[in-house]
Length: 625
Image 1 (spheres, rainbow, N blue to C red):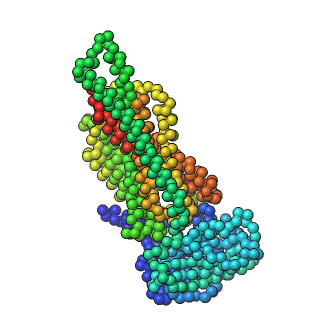
Image 2 (tube, rainbow, N blue to C red; image 1 turned 180 degrees about the vertical axis):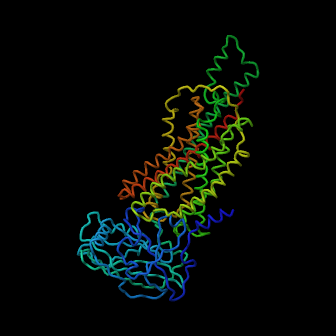
Image 3 (cartoon, helix red, strand yellow; image 1 turned 120 degrees about the horizontal axis):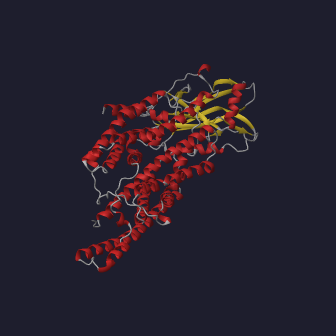
């Protein structure tokens, strides 16, 4: 409990000005955060990488204390040194001058060429602005970059692909602040005074502050950053309706085909059992025996092998436990986000979502241990067999499986970030905090979950005994073979979520604040239903072809949805983004690969759980010798 409390406190995002209330003439802090190419979200550098007004030019600066979530989200807030007082207007004044020597000129020219933008915060409200642009003689007016809720979309549209005109840097920054009583409601940035980039020129950076009263409420001040037209577009609602209709169709198909077919199967098997009990099974010349061998085919034929342990049981149990953990992780995070009005919306606080994911992953480690331990234990029904099991190795494999892959990917990305000297580099102390949380919170919970799973959740509940002799598997029709079933099953689940994937990808890679977590929960529920229905159909056809190796087939076929998600991410990269450079490409495909692997484990587990319930149900309703 002590370690858990310490970890939760360590991961808490510090909120800057806690109560967001100020007195007249109280000094405020304008924080500068990052700068980088607009089209490369992960290629962000420290603000002072560009030759802006720096501490050695008389501008006081200090780094803001940040939580782990803020740092991992790529924030590096520093005091800009600009002097602001609550409700006090400041006329335009010169902050500093920068001489354009070869080094400074090259830095600014590269920034304009690659559409560099910068990010600042005032009272936890984000502010964005462009470093400069290519400007023609007809374009000499000041540019207001933040008077619309689609702020970043405006910034992105400022740059033309043809790069016409001469490069200029905006030397003036005007901060327009709206306030209501003693609270700040809205902050807008006006960039102006474009100055040409020529060797030997001097660029003067000026600053101005204007305060304006407003009647807007503090509670709704973040609404202007939410793109309602994008997230609540008609196509979003249509996609939900389309997915819902797909669920109804698929559930109806399962009910019509499987239940009707199973009813015939049960009737046939029951009739045969009654004939045997009444003595009609003994017919001269072996005629009945021949008929029985012809009629008794399909899924009942493999009742003695259907509950045989899958190959590579340790690995399979670890995958199942990790997938179960990710399922509860997603549910917990989404429900926490939906409850935003109770504790504060996650999109309003820097790093809040990252902190939530980390804490939930640590807490759900108990679920991973329980899932893998109980699944592995059920295949060792006797005390002697259980004593010979390797449950300790299963527990360790479950605990290290996903983190090992995540650490490998993130270590590579961290090395790339260090090489390019970006602020996405994970500091050493953050790594230490994550290791402490992992070893002293996640690991004990995983051990506890595994012990509980072994002793209380791992009882053998199979309705049929497993034969001592392994039954050979015949070659079935083409539609029952793994190389056909695995890719086909993943199509329907992907079809139910690919529209939502577009909105999620756009939020993550195009600076939009995702807030429709109710949509996400609904789509996730639809996904789970489609996965279960599709996996049941696949298992039925597999067992009917007398192939009793259904566990791996179910997991891989349901998990194949992730392969379509990754293929869609490739399409999204080339068709929906303008990312460039080795660093951004590494981060994009590194994150997408890790996300797809986690999605594979989650989908595979959901499909396995549904098909396991189905298989146990059909076999407990037949009588076998």
